[in-house]
Length: 195
Image (cartoon, rainbow, N blue to C red; front, top):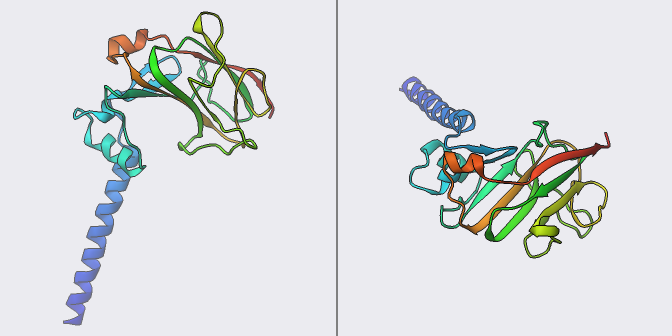
């Protein structure tokens, strides 16, 4: 009797543990669908819609994310510069160009896993559309660097890889595969590296 109970418990542990491990593995390794790219920027506009695949929704929910719906905005992420090289916190980058029309936009830096970078004193690694200095023709230039820079500056504290996240709120940008590739987004150019 005790032997059968022991076997039952072992069987349940293997079944539940194996099932949980397979779900975790599937969420970590399933390819994300609905990705649109334009230069170094990529977006997953279907995440906030009923058309999103269940693996993408589950992965996003597990990370605590709240996807924007199509009428709310779109999140664009860059993990590489415009030349295709990975973004590193030890390098200086210049983000420049025009932004698509939006009621409000935010630009911030994260580590490779999406966590916020540490503050540089009282300066955070984040900007929004109402706190930047615009250039001629409403163009934007932002310096990403460890060292303070003139004009618009995002501090990149620490070491390792990073991501640049641009969120456009209440934008008229309709994202389809045809339109997204033609969307004009800022370039990300590496200027210098410290290490």
